[in-house]
Structures are given as C-alpha cells and as structure tokens.
Length: 430
Image 1: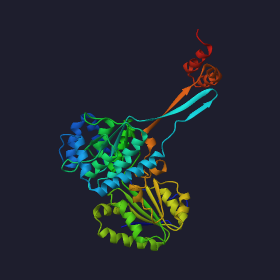
Image 2: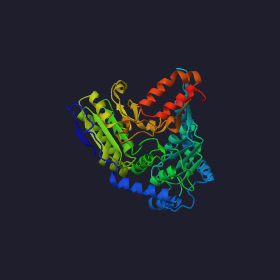
Image 3: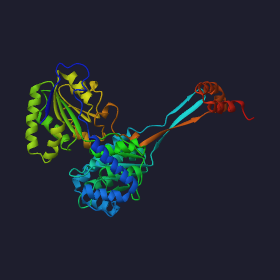
Image 4: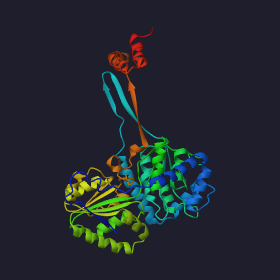
C-alpha cells in the first residue's frame, strides 16, 4: 500500500529521489484548455452544457436564489450551525491579525506612502461531490471579507438534482457570500475568470480543487485574466514519526488526507523500520472499514510512500525536499524540529495537533500550496485579496535636488524624454 524508499546513507539533495510523478499530463492540459476556450467563447451556454456533461444535471438558472440559501441555512442541524459559526470566528480572528497598515516613508524630500486596497470582486471555489467542503467556503470568503472586498461570489458544483449541498449554502450564509453559482470544475474557474452573462468576472480566484480545477487556475492566471491564490490541488501530507508515536494515530492522519481522493499524496517519514511496519498495519486495518475506502486506496496506490531515513535531521531534509501541503511532526521533541522546517504549507506539532485541526478550526487557512509549490508559495491570506499602490509626493525643491540623478540614469539608458521630464521642471516655464 505504501511504496517504500530507503534513504539511509544518502547525502546531498534528496529532491530527485522524492520527486512526485507528473501531475495531470498533456491530456489534462488540453482538456482544460478546451473548456476554458469554450466558456470564454459561449459563456452561459457552454457552462450549462459542461455541467450536464460532467455533473449530470441540466440547469436553467446558474445562480442559487437567495431564498434557497436561507432555507438551506435553516435546514442544517444545530450542531452543524454552531460548528460553522465557531470555525468562522476562529478564521476571522486569525486573519484579522494579517491586516496591514499603510506604510509611510520620507527621504531626500520625497514623501512615499502605500495604499492597501482590496480588489473589487473575489471569486471563491468550494469542491463538492461526495465531500462537499463547506470549510473551503469559510476559508476563502472570510479572508476576502477581512481584506475589505466589497463583493464575494462562490462557485460550487451541483449534484445530479441540480442543487448545491445544504452545508455549502449554509457556510456561504455564515460567511456573508453575496452570490452563489451552481457551477463546478474547470468551467467554474473559466466563468469566474472571464465572466458570462450570469457570472461576473472576478479579480481573484481562490480555493482548492482537483487536478482539473488546479490546471484551470494555472491557465487563466497565465493568460493574465485573473489573479489566483496559488496551486491548491489534491491534498498532501507528510507525517514524521518516531517510536513514541501511536501507530493508529499516524495511520488515521495519513488516511484523513488520502480520503480526499486520487492525485493526492500521503507520506510517512521515519528512522525506525518498526514504526513504518506498525503504521502500515494500522493503516490496513483502518482502510478496510473506511467510508471512503475507494478514494483513499486510489490516493495511497499512486501517492502513498514510506520513507526510511537516518534520523530526525534527515527526516526534515526529506520533508523539505517534498515541500508538502501539510507537515505533521509526531515525534519526541517535535517542537525542536520546527527550526529545521524550510518548505511546507502548514506545520502541525505534536501528537495532539493533527492536520485536520488546521482544516477546520485552528483559524489558519487550509487553502495551502501543493505539488511542491510550498518551496515558494504560502497559505491563502488576506493580502491575496489586496493590492499595494505606491503614492509619491514631492515639492519643487525636492525635485531639483534629485533631478540630476534622474537625468544621469535616464540618459545612460537612452531615454531622453525621461531626462527631459525632470529637466523641463528644473528650468521652469519657458
């Protein structure tokens, strides 16, 4: 179930040994490209046809009526309502700490400050299917609200009956989403990026999804159509464990991310072969009775690994080489290993801090970089919904002071009009 890799005695860069298999491939790239082109050309008509093809339902109206959202929020059980509200409050509280103040600076007579402005419209995506991720509604819409975005819209795939799950709509209600559309997959990303008669074009698209959703986000960003939060594809976890870790807890944490389905990754890193043996036995037992056995087995077959290393330092070197979405440190003195972390979307320290806490109620965002992009990317945050605009002010005396430097630099670059723009001001009206 977990393919085994022995890295003991291996020195140097571990990335080649731990490289992921190629994701998606040319077929996915081409398929997504065709969907984007179709939606861009035909708008709502293409969205309806693609929804019928991929989701098995015909839609007259793409927007979910506000009354339907309110009814769904009223139908969910009280415990779900309370949990959504608790998660909302946790997420808002953490993201409030990310608010940036406008910067001010003065030097050589030049006054500079920076405006921090929200985008006009944010588009959120929440995966559906057998696992309607209501938590992703909160994780995307709430940071946009904290950023001050005036309009937040949501796309979520409909079921065969054409309805978006109640819990998704309830989460949208809790997060004060303005409009919900029953659209999923690459066609949802296309509609948000390009706009249609029904769906307004947005400035930022945020949210996790399968490989096709992630590829769609990559392509629309490459076209300059919209900003995206990053590559938030199929779920990933690396668990670093030693002999102090309960093998059943190691196993359930691997399973928790694997149950999202194919394309993900679940990796155990240990320096004791017995830890791997016991964890794999526990994983076999859990998988045999898992509700989402097929999804988890598909992930483990393609992306399940057990990596044997020399010790804690090499374990973290392996984790950094993988650059996982979630990194769990389930070993003695786990807190001391945090200093060795270089590349991870989020780190969970100790046996009582599983990644699922971050998925729901830690307050941190669960829209995290995947596919190794944690080497340079970060969790979704308030700044992803904002722009920074520089404002420059100077009087004539300051202009005269700095003009010689401008002229020299402009002339050495061969840009005479640049030099003239300050020279004419220095000389005054002719």
